[in-house]
Length: 398
Image: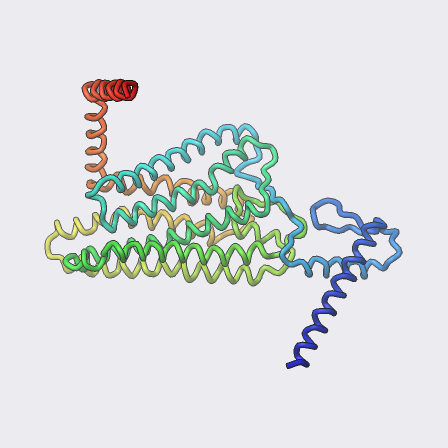
């Protein structure tokens, strides 16, 4: 035991001496201006007239970079955005601002409507409110910065902000995959076992399914973000996109991205395609259950309850697969347009799809509007004014 402790102390002392020697070496080199940093951050260009061999300095500099694995020489990234034409950017600004505001209003309105209406306190609408929350987070992680970039000449983003932006996007996107699979399972239970639906989909179990969806998205995105942004970025810092996306960020790395690529691939297969497999299996069982229904009216009603969810799944997975199945730089503009539809338009369209095709939501919205109209009628306004005046009189008397 003493021998092992002695060896450990010897190794620790040796590592300390090596580290101190390296620091002294580079402090002396910088003091004598034997090398200079120019161009991109982290690119070391040696002066030709130094007295030391160039191979020695190159090896020492590479070891210095490897020794500090958590440090990256690139402090800022440059986002190219959708277009570099200033006139087009000024036209796109009000368009995307309107889309972002509509996304916030529709999704927040749907969450509030489900919250205040007791008829909508069912598993289906609980999942729908969670989907609206995910859409708000996903859109908010990109749209404000993209809107500000339309009005700026330098579209820069810090290394940490880029990592946080990708983490939020990946977390919400993967959570949405899991939530869509949960909603498909909910529709299968409602159609396949209608008599046992209330016993199976109890509120506690629904909240657990939502927590699993968010937890899966959080852990998966955390693994992706750490593996991607732990790579060494030594110079090129121009991202060919309007947000920090993994394929474009990894291409700037100076180290081997194989582990990061495999991590992203495994997460996409396990979470993304795994959720799609659950959705397909659920709809397979739904079709089998519908075929057992004898009346055409009952079959049509069962299909109608799945129409909104099916449209959302096709829209989400169709655009996502179009974006990430062909991430090559040869079709950069096409990739950006598909990403806009996947990231910006889908969160705006989801509440619209569920609202237009859902009679229960329409009726609940009409009741809320009617109730507010009655409340804000002339009679109630005058009554409210009289009550307010009386309260003030009582306060002054006291």
